[in-house]
Amino acid sequence: MVSKQRYSIFSLIGGAVRHHRNWKKAWRSPPLKSDYDVVIIGGGGHGLATAYYLAKNHGISRVAVIEKHWIGGGNSGRNTAVIRSNYLRSTSIRFFEQSLKLYEQLGRDLNFNIMFSQRSEVDVLLTNASIRNMRRRALNMAVEGVEFNMLSADEVRQRIPALAPMRDCRLPILGGSVQERAGIARHDAIVWGYARGADERGVDIIQNADALAIQRNLNGEIAGLETSRGSIKTKKIAIAAGCDNAAVAGLAGLDLPLQTFNLQAFVSEPIKPVLDVVVNCPDLGVYLSHSDKGELVIGGATDPQQISFRKGGKIHILEDTVAGLLELFPSFRQLKMLRQWSGALEFAQDGSPIISKTSIPGFYVSAGWWGGFKAIPAGGMNYAHLIARNEPHELAVPYQLDRFLSLDFLPEGGTTVPIHWVTFICSELFYAAGSMSVVR
Image 1 (tube, rainbow, N blue to C red):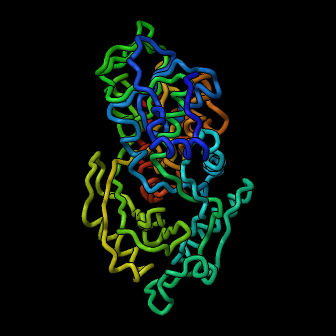
Image 2: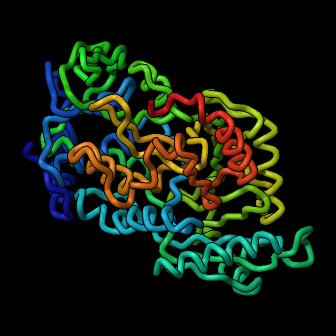
Image 3: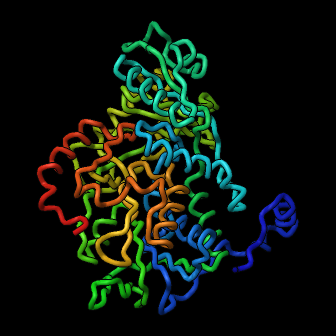
């Protein structure tokens, strides 16, 4: 264990008295050791959470987290930070509900202010199809004992007074749904908190180290990793590299059923508080929340016509998102956009994630996290269980790679992925399954 400074009101007062010169570094920058029990490739939320739970829950602290840039420099720092568990499938509901429960106590567990605000998420529904879909989701969640309620149009307007007046609506609001325990958290704080907690338990965080080659012995088992900062001997390599997962898996000769899409988000100039909930409108493809700095954080749909790793935005996505935003909130028409960002969003080909060992002994995969910020705690905890015991946790059993070989797909309509794309890709997989090499 590495001794850490305890954060509290008293340490904050002491820091202020000493002009904030007494703070210790949140985590070390240790030299790369020649061997580790486990090497995790990817220093984002999922990779760091996995390292933290390996040390905390399983006593495995000889772990290295290898990040080619800086920790949290990928999708962990490029998202809209929404946390919810209102999914459609029972498998997804149970998994993301565990993650939401972990978020509710995460600040105390990590001794770090993650700025978790359970302000609720309200879905504004404009079509009968969306009403039916959300009612179905509510019934499925009720079976799992998770609260998710339908709202009338008047109740939606009571919760979101800034919505367009009824007379100005092109598509009248027919109703809505709400998950009261949903909310947002500071995405950087999640990464920093897990990094600090993992480092405290002896995990080495190695930044600016690119994975170059994965070494295997004569039996095909994992033997080591070659990085830009040196060689490592290890018997277990776990990848959690976001949109680079497919490329990293290729270093071991493994193909993964993954694709990437471009996803954009936008932030407005700061304004006085007008929203105290997360607003989502599936019919218009827009969602937004009000940050603690006064900015509106706005997200839209992916670019379904472009499968790419590009980080830049495209103007037609911005136009579509802003059009949907102004349909709901015409009073925002004079707002200026402060900044925009974009990222490559990894997509497992049935819309559900992958937490699995592979056909290569000692090689593990955590991938396909479409909207994976909300899943960081549960994703890390379940991945750590798999790595430590070489068998999946009961919550992660359906997320094994062999589901693609057996055609046991998990198309999840509760993600942000359009369901028609899931259906199309699954049908393509049906015909291609005989030649797939994902787990062979």
